[in-house]
Image (cartoon, rainbow, N blue to C red; front, side, top):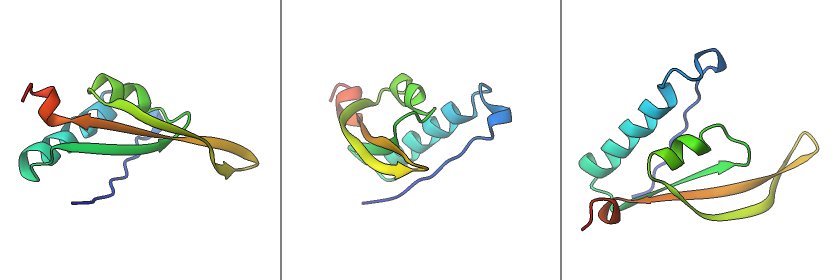
Amino acid sequence: HHCLVYFIVDPRRSGQGIGSSLIKNINHLGKSYFRFEWMNIELFEGCPAIPLLEKAGYTEVFKQEKFVKLDGEYLGRHLYQINFKEKDGK
């Protein structure tokens, strides 16, 4: 299965647990409903979701420098992964 998920949290609501709740629910759907063994999340350098992913058990698989140029500035691409089988000790 392949699926794209986008989520944005209003900066005025930052720090209220909304992003963490979204990631928790996305993980639950992936693991329980779709029965994924692992999931990947790709994002750009500087994304405020990076600490949330790490807290949720995701690890960085790779980083590609200068992946995209936005407003004259290059940003790297990060790929994070969670392995549900490893996380559950199976």
